[in-house]
Image 1 (cartoon, helix red, strand yellow):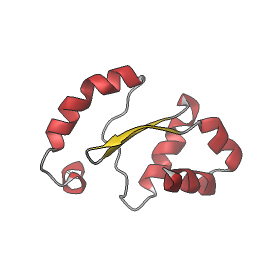
Image 2: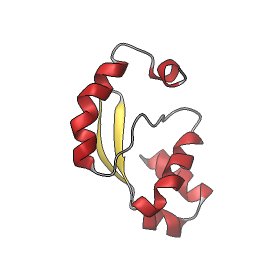
Image 3: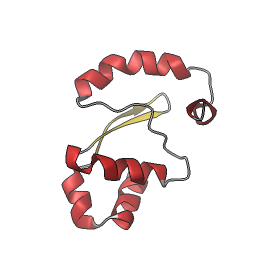
Length: 89
């Protein structure tokens, strides 16, 4: 998560990083759930895309509850597959 925050601050600024309120909600099974302020959502996506494919957004949601309800389907879709290859198809 530190690398995401560092790159975010580099691309935008520390004030915008504070406004984004980035928070790691969950991490396991090779995925990471990050919560952010909706107004800074686009900046977070730009930050993730600038991290040399280290982080690939697989899904976004307006609420954590909705995202969690879809997580089983998301994990099943990528189970046993290289996510980097799968995300390019």
